Image 1 (cartoon, rainbow, N blue to C red):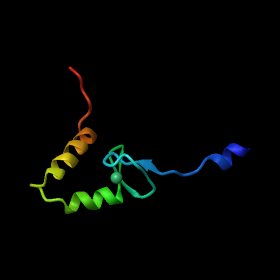
Image 2 (cartoon, helix red, strand yellow):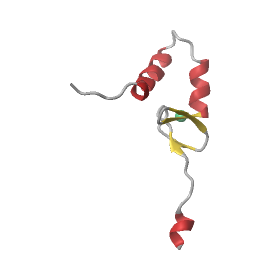
Image 3 (cartoon, helix red, strand yellow):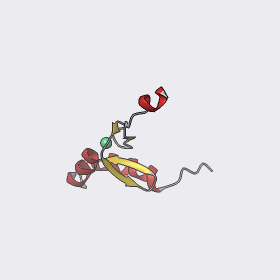
Length: 67
Ligand SMILES: [Zn+2]
């Protein structure tokens, strides 16, 4: 079957950069690529970028509840 050949591993979508990546870590059901993971670790807590990462991560750890 040709569908077997067409099926290729494109990795997973990173929740931070929203790119398809092969390598990364899983956080709950979400995926963070190694680049973003490393970036996050190196980001100072007083850096605005840190808040950006934090808000992205919040989506992962907090279920989206609309009340
Ligand atoms: Zn990423």
